[in-house]
Length: 393
Image 1: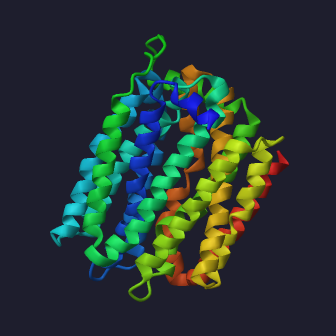
Image 2: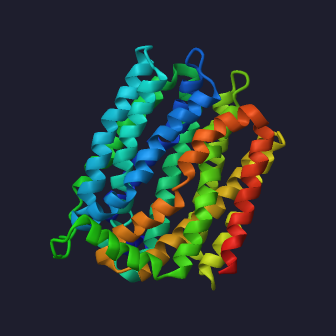
């Protein structure tokens, strides 16, 4: 409680935490709503789901480095808030298409692609907002509390998502998602952050070169990013495509998948709490061992385990993810110079998610050709091996 009181004393921290809770409430709704909305379009199958989900990732990855430059040039809360506000309108268009009974694969993919462009601006800037609010010695606690709030919001959204989709359809769930983005965007936009440090008026390429030098000079960063290129490819394939396909049987598919999402996010809440209380001697080493263990979720669904067991494995995966994220964000914010932080974060995201769109795009076709079980075994094994491989550096 003392830690929370100290964090609340810093102006802007409470609105930031509130914004992340509200935004992730919507983020918990959207995976279930969009996935099962696509699968319920007449004639749609796993390949169409892969296409829609991958459409967001390709522009996000392609423009991520530009987003890093933008995040280091302009006030980060305005970049983040503006992206959320504009993105809410794209989400609303998708929602209205379902409510009005005129959704198409191309419309949903187009809205996803536009949202991906905004994500490319949002991601690098968002990672730099917290350091503009808190002193360096509070980064670990601040990251843990922000993650905790975000995950609680996601759990609530995931639990509501399955029910809303089952009872009222995907459109209304996506409309709530759009509203949460708009509200969160307003909260972040209005944060009173210090002005960006004065900098020379350099070209975009010059700024990217400076960020690359900061990124490449740290072998520990490169090792983790290379590992997560594989891990995120597998995780996003599971999250966006393979999980919904595995539970796309009978009327309880949306509910059962939403319970899995709620379980993994409950694990994330526990992971945030662990990261807040426990100080690891070797934070990143411990975190990557936990990430290797997160593959149990893939294996549980691959072997058609009972729902309760897959939820337990999802919770284990969630604990691993958030322990890692808190340690990783803290390490980056502590060791990367503030004036180039967004660019280094952009290289991190670009590398970590560089091949994720390919995984998402091919997850549906792979499941159709090899079967869901074989594909999930492959994602689990790749996750396990990639996580442990990073420890060799």
